Image (tube, rainbow, N blue to C red; front, side, top):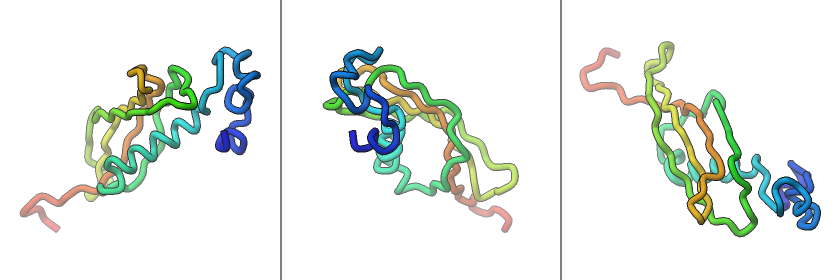
Length: 127
């Protein structure tokens, strides 16, 4: 609720009685909060221990079901494809499909993005 109060102050995120009257049928997390949680889960799971160089943007975000106050969330990351950078041989792009699930196994959000990652130079490669 603190996140919503500052960044997404809509009734379905702040007021339980008002939220029951919305299409959400009850209090739910902001979709933007869900994006922040997903990023934290990615950072903890692998990004902080990788050669990540950031991301050029997000291709698609879908909020599929409400995230309720006591939901426990789980993240699945799938590598869709990889490619080397044309202009920077030390960098490549890894395209991910991320899926966020609640404790009942329902997919509540998807996010597709490419991460820019440092590449290892192949042994014997020219400098």
